[in-house]
Amino acid sequence: MDLDLFLNFDESEKNALIKRLSAKKIKYKKEGIVATNINNIDTIGIILSGKINIIRYDYNGKKTIVSTLKQNDIFGKNFNKSNNNELYAIARDDSEILFIEYDKIISSKNPTLISNLVNILANKVVLLNERIELLTKKTIREKILDYFSYLQSIKISKTFTLDMTFTDLADYLSVDRTALMRELKNLSDYGLIKKSGKRITILY
Amino acid sequence: MDLDLFLNFDESEKNALIKRLSAKKIKYKKEGIVATNINNIDTIGIILSGKINIIRYDYNGKKTIVSTLKQNDIFGKNFNKSNNNELYAIARDDSEILFIEYDKIISSKNPTLISNLVNILANKVVLLNERIELLTKKTIREKILDYFSYLQSIKISKTFTLDMTFTDLADYLSVDRTALMRELKNLSDYGLIKKSGKRITILY
DNA sequence: ATAATAAAGTTGCAATTGCAACATTTTGAT
DNA sequence: ATCAAAATGTTGCAATTGCAACTTTATTAT
Image (cartoon, rainbow over all chains, first blue to last red; front, side, top):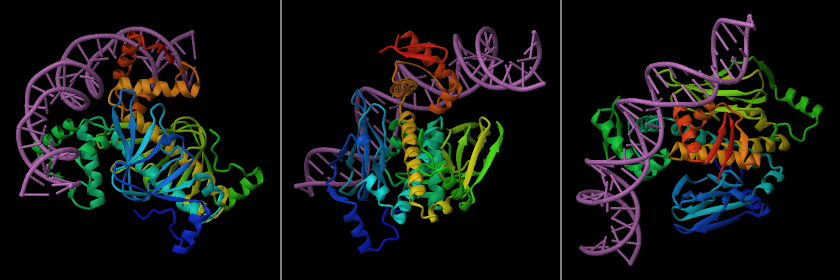
């Protein structure tokens, strides 16, 4: 992903900008709590390195990974709004996060900086729409085939390796993990895919 | 919704800007085709009035309303990207749409204009996240209760009237319409809600 | 006013799915 | 190298859901 809030700034400009925006870079250890109640903060967090899980705890204590964010993704400032349940951001790996107050970016009146923010947001909208496309599919089979055909298109190959665990894939597609495994087996048995661990080949 | 690309411009500034951006305002009749193949256009459409359905046709001809857009919503420029299936935008009511080339907004270097675009996009991200929250719920019951509690929070009342048809609600929640009706009946029978047509009261 | 079209509502049934309860394999830390 | 934890994989079963096939009620157009 070549999206970056500081795209088209050189290193010294970037540092000056970070200083002027009072941006704060904070490091987190794996499993560290990055932010609580992120639906109500006026700060945006930009992931410089590592991975962050956005997590929702239901009223009955059930945990759902709402999304997983990686380098250059942003969270906060209502970008991950939830109605009832509070959302938490937890480091999935050792991570570095840059916190900037949203209003300071806007009031900076720096066209390049703001354009970069537009591109990041537009990209986020694309990713969210892609996920919605998958989530609106009615069967697990359709979700899998759709996601695999997406992977096929970005890896430009009918054979590819999943870059997440099946546990996380089940979360992403919002289906039961064991039901996902079962359906993957069905697809293999029907000869629609070949599966060897996380290595998948589309056979149609 | 007080989000508007031309927020903080007065009428004459706005008109000058529209001219400079070569923006085009086009009117559509209900059911009119606003745009085809909207995943591949470099233009953004801003809905000035009316409502637009973003529609996907599956390989097997099945129609799904991917989203419904209303005043000040935007589409195009990959904001509604789809992997395989082409997306169409169709006017749900008589509508007016302003088309602007995305690059012209960015290269305008107009901080107010771009800030407005940021706010529109940020708002869209929020709405998409809200929908994802609903779609990741495992049962129809959970989806309904979550959506109703969202309506309760914005209408600030335990009684409210749905502003879409149950057919569209089923699409939005991505569930079978008749299964939705059945579950609404179950919720009534269990005494969790009261339902009289589209008038809903939450009883807990 | 009435015909046509869309939406709402109901029900039976089969297919899909989630969940529980496991065994096995892989990964990661010390 | 070894132990613990996480991930993978399997299966039976019950619950949920989608689909088909309707009827009834609203809405819209002429």
